[in-house]
Length: 390
Image (cartoon, rainbow, N blue to C red; front, top):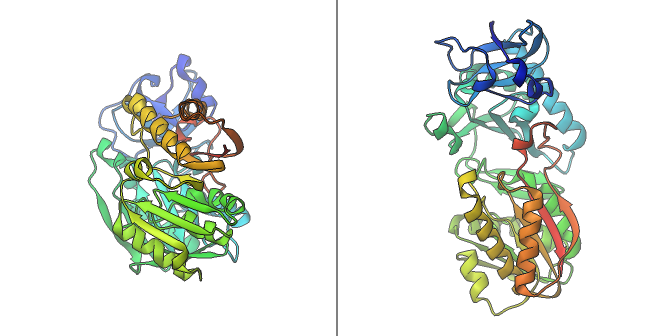
């Protein structure tokens, strides 16, 4: 195994078990190390610090995946990581009423660059880096041994791969995978398009937020913005909503949302499905809603877009606040990693001030149990959700 030395002045994050090692932290980087090559990190005195894989000659040179000296990287290495991650999900998430969740959450499960989502008996995987992609055969084999899935489908079609100079890759890696999978979540059922849907087909990280919204929906008129395939809509109906309006720019997503409403035994007459831009819909709406759910895509794709994104978040939240009735409930989310929770809170206060409404937090959420986060890995924090009373 190749040994790389960490500079004494840069050893702190490694000792703190941060999963990224930047190239400037290394005393020397030999030429010709291929992506994915296992490396051992040591201090200037030669003491062992961590192990990982070499990824590139760019900013993040090493991704850490272990803290045991002389741990061999082979098929059993990946099996141990996967079984450990699965144990956490089986203990705290999986149940007769829930069979869909994130199985591997990249760095946070000591498999940097790897995402694996479980949908009933099927797995959907994403390889985000060159380094982890070089171990694809071993990882797929370990997933087969550990979970024995009916099929494994690859959705390595995420923008982050462009930074690695990798192309988009999709297709079956193992077994057979249907066009749509039916999953269970908190007792509800959903059709999931794992091959063409956003992310890996479903927003698994909103499970606890969807459930929280139920208690605010009874006898309420609900507007579900950026509704995608109707996750929040189904929960609102289950909570006793009088009527739910779902707005999204995707006709196919709205079609699946309607199917999900029917799949769970609810009357689609209690719903409206509007294919439109959410901002335009909010701006032009004359109706006042009791509950508005804002779950937009990330407005801040990178740090250079932060100011622009904050303007976008502030504007859409102000429009939603103006469209709410007295004592209304706003469920507002941000999945932008470059927007800190306190910054999100501040822009919401500005939106409330501009709309002339006082805002009170009732609940706040971040990642779910199946999206664990390493404590030092602040870069992995992205999801924020506030439930607000006006």
